[in-house]
Image (tube, rainbow, N blue to C red; front, side):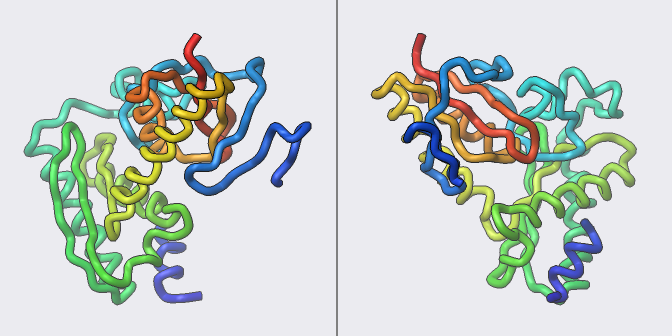
Length: 234
């Protein structure tokens, strides 16, 4: 086990149906689904992107992809944030990440910013792939640990976002393109399409791309196999 994996550990068919259905794992791949499939009632997809385990995830996508912020703020200690609050969250998160980099003997520049109502901490470096992992799984785990560190200091819930090596921006572009392409196929064929499993951060990006294309999207399934379904007009 590499030193980086040790740090992350410490801190943290394809099946055919009459030739119609397929499982996919790569961006751009889609699965045809029966129009009668059980969906969870999402329409439109205008939710806040968030992949955090600290965000309460319920049965609907408002709780799932947005972290159920409006419904759960009081129950989870969340409060309104000023810019100064968010900057302080960013400082705590940056200190925590800097400590991890030191332990792992990794070099990286840390940038802090505020985007909307969340602090954003970005780590840029040439050898940070180990801290991203397959499909961003290590990055997601590190983000949750960092949020816990912020929560421990502030006493309230945080939606701080961590990015490493520009992964989230690259992934955002890939998923937006995949969502747009799938929406165009649904528009052309009139047949719903089910995409590969995604985390809440990824699903929100696809929902937004589909909404921008003028179609509706819903989410189906349970984590970690929850995925976006794109629906035709009408």
